[in-house]
Length: 211
Image 1 (cartoon, helix red, strand yellow):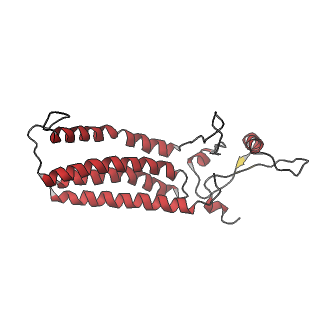
Image 2 (cartoon, one colour):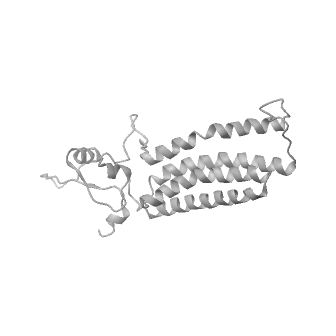
Image 3 (cartoon, helix red, strand yellow):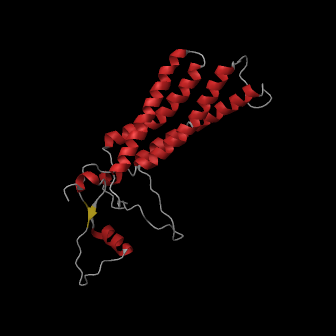
């Protein structure tokens, strides 16, 4: 299979002799692979493949006999963890907007800050986009683990996703006071496009039937 090296990001082989021509069941095949299997060369190895781990088979039965045991790569855990640490800033923004809307009767109202209708709309847009794009960024981290892309492009997509959330939200907030912040908004939109296009291409390139 000449395209095997390019299509797969994880591969292993095992040689075993048996008297019967009957194929082993799934559990037996997994056990044999763990006992005597070896990694096979691929052009775009995953984190587990590079680390030399044989426990790359994703579809393992859950303790209750159903579902899948989802395993995130180290890269996905790192970026997702850092992204989650930004959620309190979004929460603070929501409390601040609530304070402005209720004129201080609820939430946190910044002293002396008044917004006209346009600024209020931009603030609401910035807060809404921050929440939506952070969630999308977390989803992209999971999807990239299943995408077939070179390591460098995977990292570009991983980083572009949370950067897009910061750029788009920050651009909306900034434009409320300084029009030059529109470039931050454009940068965030471009970063989002990079993240979703690369992730989409990587998912389409992954051959069907791969775990």
